[in-house]
Image 1 (cartoon, rainbow, N blue to C red):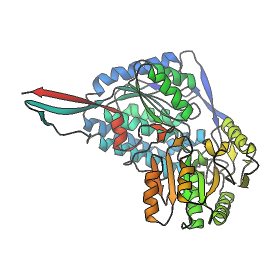
Image 2: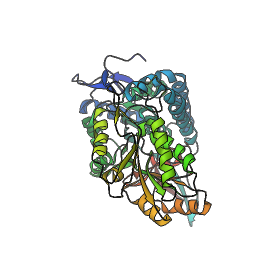
Image 3: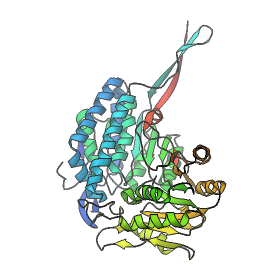
Image 4: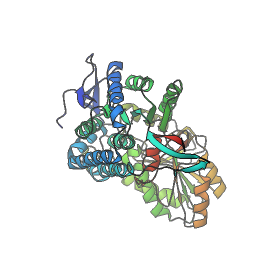
Length: 476
């Protein structure tokens, strides 16, 4: 796709700009320079997209699972065939190393689409039967309706796929708004969907927070699904409550990593560093809070600091760095503020400073000596920053791990199988990894507890979230 002068929305399979001509600047975070513009959609464009989705739902809801499967498979195939084009769009607005987008994110996105294509043909249900004399009961699993979807800036393409995939597979129609700083790869995906789906099934509106509010508040939507911060999720929930709309909230994380004395400190530090610094730590499941047994604290932190010092920031997407910049100048300022306000008992073992004069790069950082009530421990950092605390006993480690508002993901590093099993039950997080951190499978659910929201992405559980259950009873 040749980048247009102004990036357009996609409404009813056609390009659309804001009627009042308003636009937003798009900034390349690798350079800090404006790289383009996108349409700043307002209530009129949101309404047009919502009405298009509602009109499409009348017929799309009657599509067969095989038809939905075929469309999703064709979208996945075109995504892979145009991988270079999608990578260009993704890197221009995220600054990610292009190599990682091509080898990690686009293949995973195509795989998720193919999973939902298959899942469309095996809906979950209960056996038809006679549960009362003279009456036969059956279950219908139906499309939920027209859904509003909002995606974040850390994985623009992948998060759009995670939203569109289950909605289309379930027979819903959707209006999706990407983050205002990273819309291009989502618009490109919307154009691909327009080639394989009826008009109005998938619509993409570009814009800012006001665009998102107009979307959430529109009366046509049966559900609002957002991946974003806890603050944004709470705002969506409050808005949706008035009309009793269903919500699907995949919100912030602050993942603890529990390292016990029987774990190899050097090997575990290497794997945890990879899980902490991928995508510049801008990942809700990033290995953010290390809780390490006091007996191996010194060896582990030395190894972790060495890995951080060796990590390379790619000063442009085409450079072969380990991670790219933070998403924006405001995000860099926020993270630097957290580091500047560190308490006196904290020690920066690596990083802690901006890298270069162009773009929004932060060095891979390790902060040791922290306490549970410190700001940088309690707040999701969303940057290449790892905090370190020590513990003396298993119960203390669990208390520290669970002692934050978020509950998305955690990992345990130990050679003790019994301990691993115990902690997988004790840790209050939607995903617990054992001796690894970060891998996701399309077949397995992704979603958290507490202030990390509710609902699942990926897996058959996600598909179910986009459906409703109806009981049908027949007398005979």
